[in-house]
Length: 457
Image (tube, rainbow, N blue to C red; front, side, top):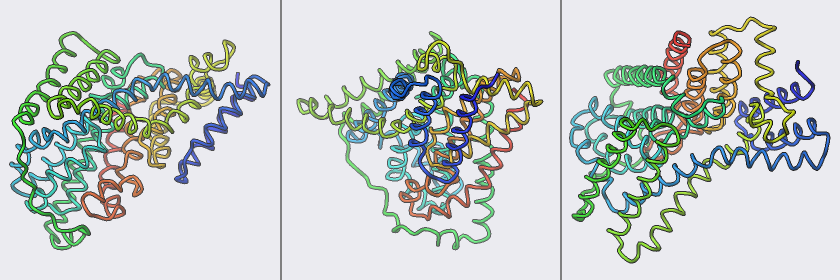
């Protein structure tokens, strides 16, 4: 039976979604929402204020592992960039970019791989510095390069996140699943469908426009003309690192498969490997100065991690109250999962089926993702997946993956101009033009993914 607190919780959820739809930040309504729910449930002003803190602590403890792994990987990427190994690793791929067609796919696939390893933000700078000039010289229009980097990096790489597992970990915890692998294993057909359909559609449309008006596409480039890719002289140690680092992560993957490491165990292996590589590279590169250099790497990495997740912790703290486990931990043993109760009430009063639930999951992910944060939608979409999946007896992992794809592809920055600025700035194109050209491929991908999702739920 729904109480007044349930309706109040639902009203705040609507306010948060509307706020995101208006492209405004949602930390304030979420923080005040925690206070309002805390006061409505406990009837005490003091306890309501305590609930605000306890909810953030509960969310922070859930996200801490994700923050640490991302911070360590970013710190490692800084060490590899300073050492030059990352440039050496990508040179072979750059050499096969002989024409515009090959360049589109090679540029995108390398962006995807680097995004899986170090996240899209560092990957944009690395790919932009090393491979972008070669792609443009090979005849790929700047707008095509931007589409490739953006769709493969902020789309496929960030939404699937198979290696670092930040996104699936948030989705899984919000949905009440045991680990990120539950989302990954259930949702891999969706990740593949979204990636293949979107990038192939984008390539076909770009190829059509190139055949019609190649000069017009090149005219969209507003940056300076690219120089020849800079040739640097690297030390022997950099070449050794360039060989050892990929092998280290290959060994990690082998260990995951051999010893069936999943979830936190797999994350711990990747995180420990990143930290060890960072330390060894710093020692080999800087000697005694590595004592200070490693501190800088770690500080920069954690500043990046905290910057990304600070607002997500507050947003997650509110939506986690919708799950029974967190609600009991924060509000007390008499609390129930508000979102779970609402979903069950809807399922009992309205004939919800797989199609409307799957559509709603993707729609909420898209709407919430419009604020420009790829991870902000995940606490809500994960919570909805757990609640409605149980209510209609559907696969919760598939639903969580649907919401994750919709939220990250939208908020991570593929179809909203305010989320495209990093790639647009590096490549030298207008964010609005890039968003316009990405729109149809991404929407086609959403529709195909929705169909596959309904079929495998």
